[in-house]
Length: 247
Picture (tube, rainbow, N blue to C red):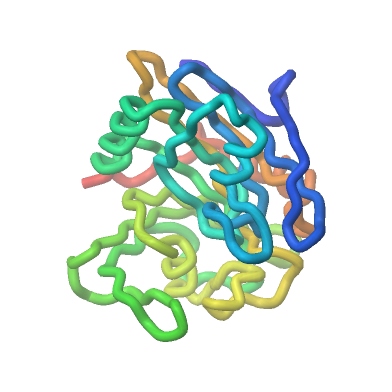
C-alpha cells in the first residue's frame, strides 16, 4: 500500500488563489498521468461563484496545458482531500468507484455540543428541507449511511466520520441528528466560528492493483490545532478502531 501524508510529503505544488480578497493556497499533493490529489481550502467553492474562482477554474487557469475532470466534490465550507481526473477514462473509472462505494473516506469534524451517543451508525433517507437544507427521513429513498467515532477534546467534541454513501450535506445532517451540529455550520445550527469545522481527512482506494492511501491533517482554523491533530493520530488511529460492517 502506498501512503501519502501532507505532513510528510515533499515537493508538492502550491499556488496562490483569492477568495474575497484573501489569499489561499491550493496544494497539489500528488500527481500522476491519470489523476491528481489536491487539498481544497475551507471557503472555496467547487465551481466558480461571483466572489471568486472555484477549484476547477483555479486549476484550469494555473495549469492551462492540463485538462481536469471532476470526480467528486466537497461543500464550500469543507476543506481537505479532493481527486481530479486527468482524462475521461480515469474520470469514468473513478465515477464507477464512487458509485459502487469502493472509496474509503474519512472526515474530521468538531462540534461544541455533546452527541446523544459516542459512536455508531446513522442511516436514513435524505430529503430537501427549507432554506437549502436537507433532512433525514425514515424512508430508504436516497439513503445515506454514516458511521462515526467521537471523543471529547478541550471542551469540544471531535468526530472521525466514515460516510458509506455520498449524499449532499450527508455528514452535516448526520451530526445535527445526533444533537452535535458542526462547529461553524450555521445552516444546520452549529455554533458560530471562524470556519466550518469539517475536513476531508483520508482517502483510500485501489488504483490499477495498488492500494493508494492519502492523509491530510487540517491546518486552517483556530480549533484545528496541532494538539488536536496529535490527539486524533493517537486516539482515533484506525488500527485501534473497529468499524461496523458495511452490510
